[in-house]
Image 1 (cartoon, one colour):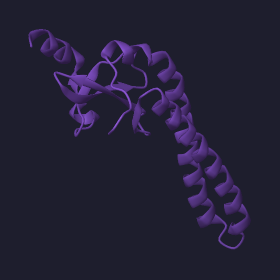
Image 2 (cartoon, rainbow, N blue to C red; image 1 turned 180 degrees about the vertical axis):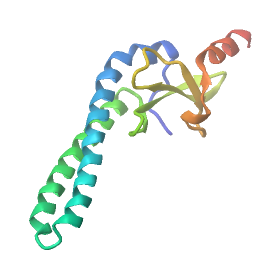
Image 3 (cartoon, one colour; image 1 turned 90 degrees about the horizontal axis):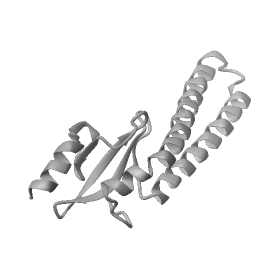
Length: 139
């Protein structure tokens, strides 16, 4: 991860309203991408003889949704954020903590940033943000 800017917790939380909108777009579009793959597989099984025309239509939808998904990911990057998971819509925000780079974590549905993790870790190894703030105050 090599962000152009490291954001403070306050700066990251200020981006939440925009992230909510982008995350909703990502969530909706990711579901459409998954549906395209499911539909494509179903078409292959059911219409073995006339699948080419149907698959072309399915491919056009898939390309359209994939392109839109890429645009939403780019929007998040322009805010200084990294989409860690499309399926769960988890966003990492590069930050600095006690002199080392970390990732603040935000997940769709959260009102603010509640977690963080080391750069080489994932959301599954997250720590509560209270620990982040407490460490900063005691050092």
